[in-house]
Image 1 (cartoon, rainbow, N blue to C red):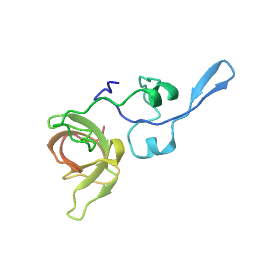
Image 2 (tube, one colour):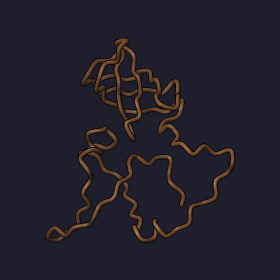
Image 3 (cartoon, rainbow, N blue to C red):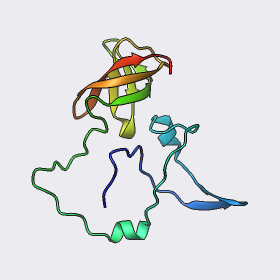
Length: 133
């Protein structure tokens, strides 16, 4: 099964009936980690739990690492909220899977547009290109 590079989060949920509509509940942690915003519109893909579990795993190329890859790429533009300040005074934003983007010259609570300038396995560095989004 191919998974888009634009995947923001992945979770399991039941569909419930609510009068004339059906509801998919999004876990609170997905909002709290900043992966998604409750005031935005998203495309949703549904995968049957039975189908997903019964599909054989694709064969891995020997050159493909088994560890998850960073959810950002150098040159990518992201909108992030600064959640914390690091030991050296740089802002810290978290995106998918809690992955950290370090944003120099930012403060807690700021929502900024950044360009990812450096990507490592456990963090990235982003440069502010627009403040107070």
